[in-house]
Length: 117
Image (cartoon, rainbow, N blue to C red; front, side, top):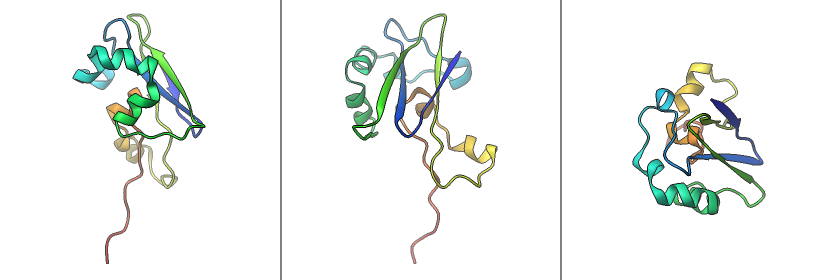
């Protein structure tokens, strides 16, 4: 298993172009879209467009790297730490991380604070 780290100017996305290699012992069963032919092909050809369809709009100066999992090597994404989480414990941070963030189709966001007056 290889972990790749997201940062302010780098975003990683994981795909398996040949089949649907997925780290299910860590993330659970793969979502249907991960195994679909359109995701598997388009994630390589147009990763920015695929991310946009997931609701993730990245600035043009953010580099996107696509990692192709195989039967021998599975990739996971270490999400970028969201701003405003500096005082959170490891357990609190872990609770923010989703399966989608760990395959790179989502970002981790800080919990909303405050309320309406």
